[in-house]
Image (cartoon, rainbow over all chains, first blue to last red; front, side, top):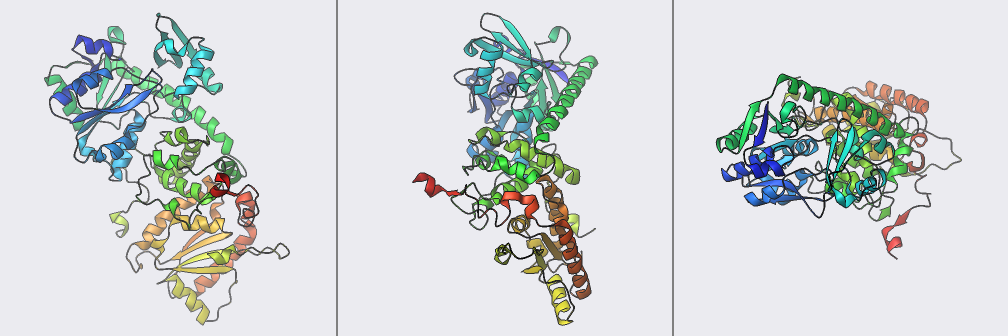
Length: 390
Length: 168
């Protein structure tokens, strides 16, 4: 575990916390470790993030810094637009949900993990772009376009404006009003992407380095290779992290996980109790069968979708037959990484990811399977060789 | 499965409807054995033969509930007896998952019954059948749990519209 930062002055300034990730990606590209980097760059404003495959140094440098209102998912982009990394070596910056989705897809042979270098980034949650603008206008009383930077720290959402103003509101109070982070981020227990190759972030950086350096955890051999390459090229400097920093990082993680449990219970309570089936279908009956949930889902990968068969779900009937939702739930729920893409894409605003996650917590009591944690956990229902030996 | 979907008229007393999937090599032969031995058992079951219990897609069982089955039974071979070696292991894994899935969507998991009956166990088939019919009477109609989405009720709903209707 290290504190790291870029050696280049410009990268240091442009990066969020010392520009370590930007410098690492650039040196990986220059040393021909990867063919390109899948990153998120800023679009029109800070409320707009675009997944983007950078193949030059300048393109990577342009995307330095972090965005909190960019609920994107890079896992499906790797499969759809980069050929599942079969013949391209890529480095990808990922939030914990990205990393988990990539691992789940790799288990299903949709992504070749050997060619993917996952640079994990700490994530306290993302915000939906349009409600975030509204929120800033309403609670912070400033023009959303004046905001240059936001940061989630100590349970508060802190906003920095162009003229140096500093405003903070507690996340709890925002979320009670229905703003703040996305619903699935409020339920997410993964803040540090320990399933990626390296996990970076500002948690645990203390002393004079606070805000200036990045905390780096090297988790796999691939991650070590990535860091070694950058260090050998002289792009980054590393110092060992002090034990107090490591302890603080663990403590922060613990506090956030406790907060999650509360909001999880509150969200699931809506569907608990008697008549559960009817409560679920009150929501599902809003469906217009656009299949956005299936298109966006990183776990959905079948070439021929079961729910497209006429004997399962009759075509052109609205609301769709319950089989559509029940089959989809059964296919997805055991491995759902709770990335929230289904809910973001739903035009009928059905709380799909909430329901899927709720079903998953029920299934976990039996399967004990935590999706996307590690490549070593077999998927429930996967064929096992030891069946005959029992 | 369409036999299930025949709606019972309201004047008739409710009778449990049981959907039974039998594996071709063990349970179906077991049921046949019970028949040739002229054993008496409740007539509520509709038996569907599948070539192997490993052929079962969990969606078939959910479809069974939505088509009006009060209990869905899955009968397969004992472990180690499978004609295709591992089919019943796969089935067992799926049924275990389904048992956890059903309460999550608000269906009583006792409505799914998974048992292993071999070709020579006609008596076990008869006993299981009688036991399950008794249980179905205790649990009551599936319509209580599915509400407006139960078979029959759904057909009468007025909110149904086709995409063509909307486009016109």
